[in-house]
Image (cartoon, rainbow, N blue to C red; front, side):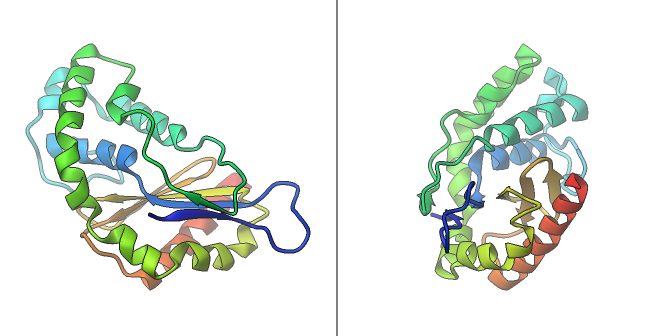
Length: 203
């Protein structure tokens, strides 16, 4: 699993700086539902049309975006100040975070039940490659210039048809990976650019 790292060098900081990098199944599920249905919500608007089942139930770009933001916010709960923190399994499923039309909730719960078989394929070898390359450690050091402007940074990887990203204030970057593998060097460079954009939006 990927890990979060906090700054414990020198004198103990008043508030440890936290970097959290993971392949996030909760957020990936949200994006996967777009691919299943075909609904297009920028920047996730490069996939083919789907079965329209969620749209027929009442999902729209607006209420999907509200749900997506809520799911991302659930991932931003405070992280205990441990030197190394193992990424854990989400406490609730993403479908349970839907708070609008009941017909959409029913369809999302059915999709969540089938998502488990797709999740491992979607994750691929992404986490193992990044762990082997010690990407969390590399990024933590490369991101030192942002340790003041970004008190915490969550980088959530998800699978999608094309490489894109979405900046989510106050702490998150959604980074898409088109295939089952990933180039650690290109990923680190992209996260540096995304951190710069997030920092700029916050200040």
